[in-house]
Amino acid sequence: MLKTYIFTILFLSWILFITMLSLFSFSDFNLDVGELNIPYADKITHFTFYLVFSILGCLFLRERTQGGIALRKSTVIIGFAAVFYGMFIEILQHTITIDRMAEFGDVIANTLGAIVGLVLIKWYFSKERPLKWKF
Image (cartoon, rainbow, N blue to C red; front, side, top):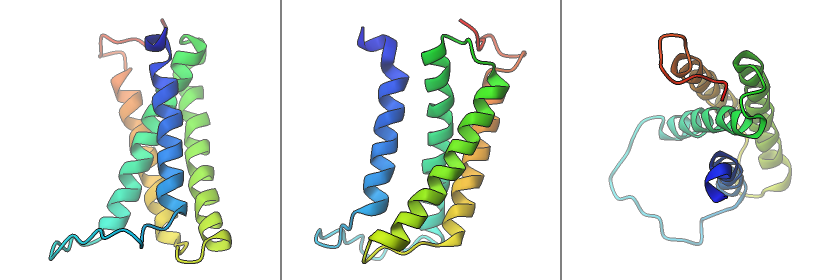
């Protein structure tokens, strides 16, 4: 039973994970990383989070519709959902949080991550691959 809803659980958990990391402050925790200084680590994180968001989102739609929704339609739906969700989170950071800051660069990183994730899904389910979109 649980196996039939694996991508639903993963996708909804991923959304919750992104929301918590984006809106809650972790300044009370000692997260000292020492001297490790990675340039643009914040943007790389945003890119990665939304890449995973778009992949899990497409697999979620495939699972819920048993492949009844076309791959192209799925990528369009999840693409818009990822971009709007990323913008919504940035707006919430700007309006309801005290120590979080909204950045346009984050929206760009989110969008690029989502696009790359969608391209990977389209490639993975392409005609050259043995795994087909429809069940």
